[in-house]
Image 1 (cartoon, rainbow, N blue to C red):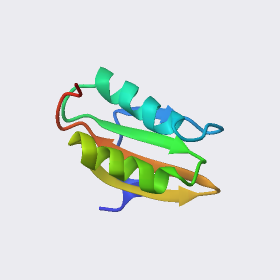
Image 2: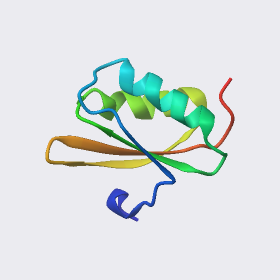
Image 3: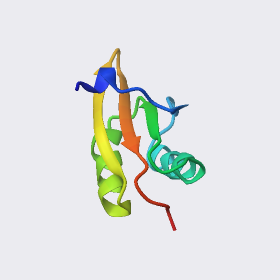
Image 4: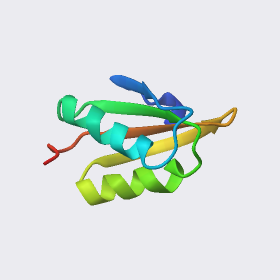
Length: 84
């Protein structure tokens, strides 16, 4: 499955913000979601390409993939466990 085909339960747009805002906003959204739900994060900070997968690995969430379109990054994170 391509990232463009992933259906997100929650879409969160953080365009216009830069590190560490996209990561902290991702954490905030994931905390409010149910296990198994998928977050689509939309950002224009190229740092998210490395930061979000690293955050997922560090927190035990599942990074499903990403795509870039017109200077915006669409990243998909599946909540697999509760955040402390």
